Amino acid sequence: MIAVCAVLTAVLLAFPRVVPNSLVRAGSLLESFLPWLGPALVVLLVLALVRRSPVALVALLLPVAAWTDRFGGLLLPASGERDLLVVQHNVGDTNADPVGTARVLVGAGPDLVALQELVPRALPAYRRTLGPALPHHAVRGTVGLWSRYPLSDVRVLDIRPRGITGPWSRGLRAVAHTPHGDVAVHVAHLPSVRLRASGFASALRDESAAALGRAVEAEEQETVLLLGDLNGTVDDRGLDPLTSRLEVAERGFAPSFPAALPLVRIDQVMARSATVGHIATLPATGSDHLPVVARITLG
Image 1: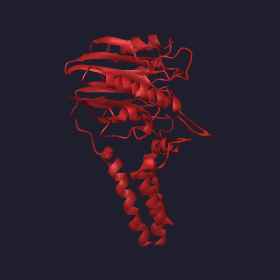
Image 2 (image 1 turned 45 degrees about the horizontal axis):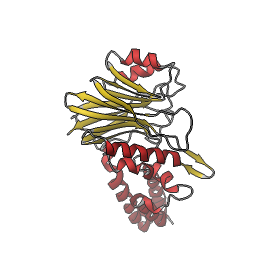
Image 3 (image 1 turned 30 degrees about the horizontal axis):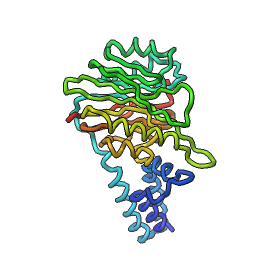
Image 4 (image 1 turned 90 degrees about the vertical axis):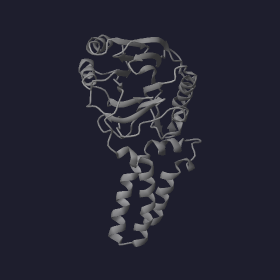
């Protein structure tokens, strides 16, 4: 049984899309927690050693190889090279300490900061605290971008799913004029997903991701950065419209949610014609997300 479990785990790691996404979206749910199959291998290893089973130990080589192939590179150390340092954070619409939150973000020394769940009462605090280091900013709806460098061509990104009515503005696009060239920055907050008795509810998120993917594809600037709370991991097939067009982080796991016990990274930094060399988390703020910081090499 241990050997059978090992082989099945290897199949799931190597070919997660054998699990269908119809009806309950079990495939997306599995992919969201795929790295956590690694700790399961430790349990299987202990059981194999207790049973002194050579067959089980040999079988465990398969999922270990599959996990290492898929996720091992994320464990490698970051290089010191970067052109930009960017921070992505869902600050939380109930955050009681926007000033403290902004201080954590600006303390990382970023060139760009993207925020989601901005509410009117907290906006002055973010402007006041981030402004000295990041004097250029744009806010559209509940998302915002602060920049060390001038911004232009700011506009709303329409990523609203058809099933959402009422006021809803969660996307913006701007061009940052950096010393290394112009960069189109897309900031987005995709709809939340829910785990219900009927399954993994991600249809709205997936529809919004498709709209965002079309916006990225239509972007006229060669270099694009996407910073956002995408409510999905980079392994989740629901984000295929984005991960098929953009590069993801080469180093770092950086689970960002929930802040009290981070299990998954749903706060993402992706790029076109640029490299996301490393991604990590910053200290906790008043939000239920952790901020993430990423090193970007342009060109």
